[in-house]
Length: 321
Image (tube, rainbow, N blue to C red; front, top):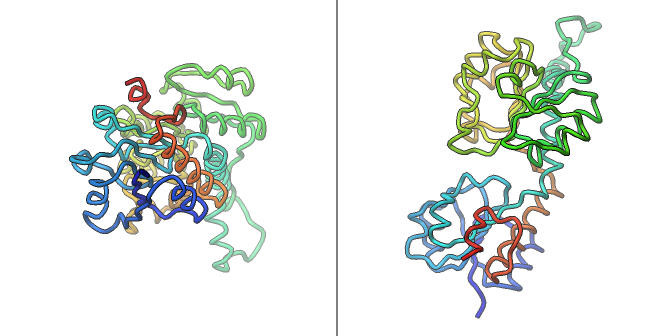
């Protein structure tokens, strides 16, 4: 008998066809109150993204595997899933390069005021040769501090060191020997990274340890000329502290792909600041990468339900049972 799978995010047609070859697939509108929880009660697995799966939604269910179409998994209570023996799979590798591209686009756009000046030109303000009022700052040769040098952070370091001759500082729970050997990255304490970097880039998952990792105290330790880049999770930054720092000139600017609440409130002061580049969480949002992520997540789920998945597992201790 085929397993029953709940899909709570729209999938590419070929990915949906792949799942239907291996399982009965039920599509659910996750925005409809109670619909996903009800569907999970009679399912073996689920695939989707950007929706919180609570322990209560799994009570009384026979779910054995969940597959998120993302690298992040803060939408799940991982200890609870592990206690229930539910495998949680994610897609850490396929989005690395496209997300690193997004990070570096934020660095360049923030430094060279690309969005601000593009709007300035379209508004008809370009009447003569530009002067210092429109100047940006260099990227090449500067110092980039990366908080969290995992897959994506390493790809950003490669772009910075090899493409832009940047010095790379990093903090990480363990040394990244590849980045040190190939990109000249240097592991330092967070305070030293903050005070020594021209660009501070956050590449950490959202956990209780990283929530508001960057607050008023950390922002004060940054250079007044520094730019904060965040394409990880919005809550790693205390947004009110960031607004205050930008208004006070404590730091020079920010490039943000993520916010504490998404979509970001249209009344947020961040959206009125010319020195802030704000994007709608597009980290991995290319046609190619989103398709690859969906396919990877589907393959993860099928293998997890078959008991053969040994990669891309968040809670590997479940596999040892």
